[in-house]
Image (cartoon, rainbow over all chains, first blue to last red; front, top):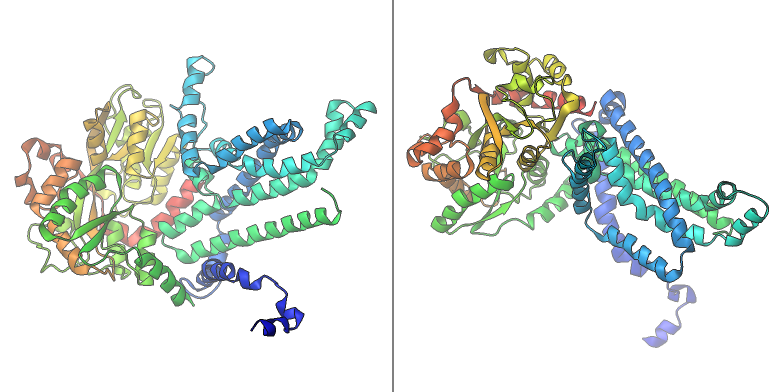
Length: 286
Length: 334
């Protein structure tokens, strides 16, 4: 037996990993590829064969609004996340490693807490009779509760909070790789701190911002829990609309079509991300 | 392909289905399902030896998925009546075996070939006394932002109730509500849209009113009843209260159909219905149940407020469910 093995041509002996990947591939095929195909099939066969579901989705003002909302929320959330995450990531990058790992731990810990719990916590904080409004009214800063929930503000606050780690992590990596001497050099050449940030730090950290930003954007597109709980009905996003079509309207054809469009958009963006990351690698950089 | 897939899905769902001598009862959770468990399931388990597993919340999409895939994990489901009429037409439900379920005393308004009543309820106007100055007296007050400022809460899903409320507030006489004038209803709702907070579950409606997050709302009377029992400072107006019903159905292909029929017989018996009404504040659908109940409880039920009461038209809704729903969600998303 063993002799047999030794005499095999080398190409057959080389471990190419396909055998080990088989269970995972089967799992993905069975529970992802096949259902997605079923989804696609449903979207063009229910209630009658044809593309009518897609025609409805693209032809109707309501659905156009939901698509617009989805992209609006994802864009706003991504922009705010970048702005909030950047200083944190920079701090983490230049901190002494011991302290840095503590802050890092806190950030990771928040990711491990249940999403629903965190979103409910925001509800308690943001509602009209919630902690934030009560406090502001007690100290006399406002006389009427601020509308912090059931609108875009609520959705943005809740989602930015959840997305932060996904922005901070890639950004820290990029920022750590930037040679601090470049900033010192800029200062020596007379650049103001703002100039150094705008002309040195920001351009150098762009790959990290792009990677994190795309990740946050793509994740935001398909978000369901947070927009549903912290937004109003006029902030409905695609995922919420799909759930409504499937659960309440029982219109699975239309729901499947919407889900398939969401999947396509997500995949396209993912491909873009791969290209960006790939390009970054090719330049041999960071 | 589709068949294989639904088959796989169904198999997964069915893996959770009950064994022999067990059945699964699915309802909406919260105080209502607690009362159903206590008043119906527990005595039924004791007398029949059939174990009743609880599941929930009711999800029409899931119900449809189970029936179409052939892996039905739910044996008895509490659903809204307009859904039951539509679902029966779509072939999603088992016909009720009235040889097992005694029909004589069941309120005919809530009994069909494929459903028996679960309980019936009224939508009433409820408010947080601390958040409202004065006393609202009818649905029209919910549309009066000057006299009654503040957030108001309505049922989020497309279902009988809110459209009718808007039409009544706009001056449509109660006997001229149907067919519903949707344009007029949405125009009226537009006037208060920015002040509406939607509730999507009974528990949320209670939380919104109890905390004052919404000053008033259209609530199920049983939820107001439970709030008052908990000592919350809430008021309620039964003026033009609107009745609708939940019914019990058996999804087509239920694995424990015989047990499910027996459960229906037990749940709709006068005694079970009386117990549930006492625990929940909802009205019994068995006309003989009242004889089993204390007089003061009978006085608190929707039956005691028939003056000006409006019966929401379930057949009209079942017929027009999809068209109304499309407009409803489109309007909400605007």
